[in-house]
Length: 146
Image (tube, rainbow, N blue to C red; front, side, top):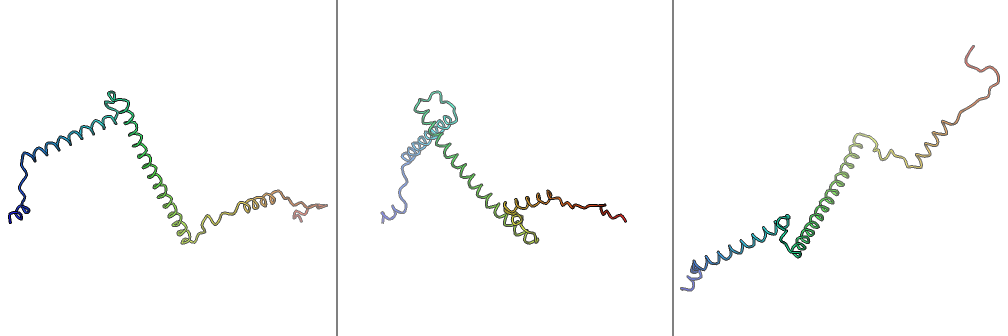
């Protein structure tokens, strides 16, 4: 029966042991915070005069890794934005075509002629302009004088 009571309400840990554990944990956390602050200052370029070559090399490597991650993320965001804009352009083109059909207009794309037909039409127009009809009449011209 005492075993069951002990399982249900275990004895409280000794206050001195518990407080020692808390002190150790607090000290460890304080050390980690200090190391992080020093690292942060070094990355920001503060207090690097006292760094060894190995520390400077490690800082440089860390900065390069961070830049690669940032550039990759930036590139990914640009690709997503480009795709979003392409999708939007496609939707706008579809809506434009739908509205053109609704208004009874012919889509501009269907009005465009192939290059060969356009050139042929231009040549025909040039031929019309360069042809002059001449008639040879002998005598008094018939101008409508009577």
